Image 1 (cartoon, one colour):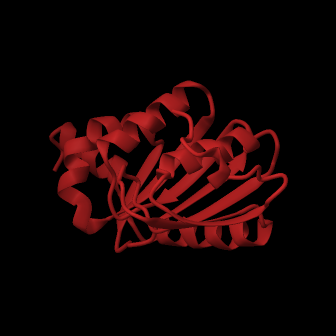
Image 2 (tube, one colour):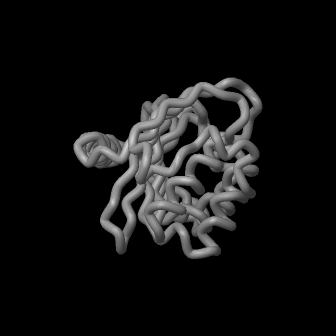
Image 3 (cartoon, helix red, strand yellow):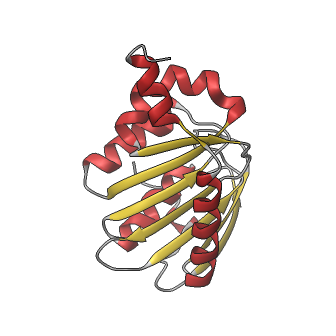
Length: 172
């Protein structure tokens, strides 16, 4: 899906730092915008909540080869919703974790370009029509700091992949 108002997102090569406060973009629009600049990429994300609509968009973006790997950290409080969407989640994300998490970030690294983008946003990995704020940056130091924090949080998290696959197999 194309961004409805392209003036909201400027080319990252011309504007490496962008700040938005709008109800005219979805977080998936921002994701597609940064992937267009990075090329095929690896992703690390955090969210409090996720929706089927966002997962569907990610599925199609990944099917087009723009996402090579994807990893996500959810919040414990979203457990019931995660369970309902698990079949979809495990087909979109390579690894998923659960922690005390209210952050909403997207970290993307172009596998072949080596470029990085960090997005800090108020929007969950959902589809909504509220005003949301986002900060997009290509600053490698910001990416480096946030990926380090992401890895630390993942290391303290419950690994959903292992937990839910065991439960699917009846190994409680």
